[in-house]
Amino acid sequence: MTEALLFLALLLALGWPLGRYLAAVMQGAPMRSDPLFTWLERPIYRLLGTHPGTGMGWRGYAGAFLASNLLLALVVWGIFMAQAWLPLNPDGVPNMAWDLALHTTVSFLTNTNQQHYAGQAQLSYLAQMSAIVGLQVVTPVMGLALAAATLRGLFGGRQPEGTSAAIDVGNYWVDVTRATLRFMLPLCLVLTLLLSWQGVPATLAAGPVDISKISGDRMPGSREVAEKRSVKQHRHAGRGCGSQRQVHHQRFVLVRSNCSRAVCGG
Image 1 (cartoon, helix red, strand yellow):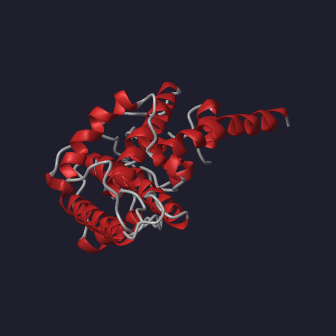
Image 2 (tube, rainbow, N blue to C red):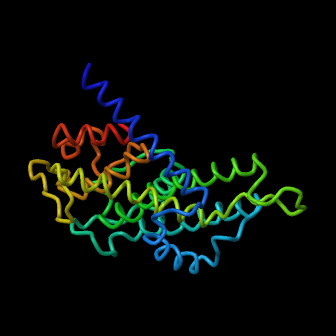
Image 3 (tube, helix red, strand yellow):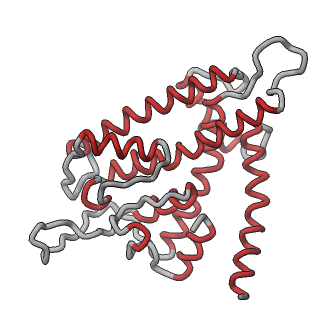
């Protein structure tokens, strides 16, 4: 009982400051951390052809959201179907069939969380880190951006009252960039380091082979579990690097690692 109360107290203690920090990030208010992040954000804004002070109407915001989804889908789909020819594939994982690659892409892009593949046998390290983890980082932030834009629209937008222009619901590219760099990635980095310190594997070495099986299927190797686990917990998704998912033996190395993952979502 004492442990449960302490755990609840920890959640409440973390929830309030993190919520205030996230609100400040999405409001675009000046922050003490600006010098740390603006030098990363400015080249991204230039690449996207946008400016933090430029707003969007709801049509422009929705269009940017759909365009980003289409771009991500094409890139990730291509990675899955070409992973055998790409780097970071020490286990020699073959390319995915186009239909399985499409299903996996749509699943992670829409947070549907259906998994019709075994991660340790059918995805290379590059596909795991860039496609799977990339979508697990970006797609929750995209949903958060839409929620923030909806709230801005309901409260009259960001522009002064009495103007005849379309309601400014924010800048989609700025919202996604700020929330990713200032909130999602720092949290994932902290949990990754915590899990790695507790013994959860984080390596790019090839996995062992189970020679007792005639089919020669690879057993779950010591993959980059800590990194994917940290992202999974923050977006609360049940997809991992092994086909055993929640019972993967390398996810629960210590009691402390179980507590760490519970704080971040279960």
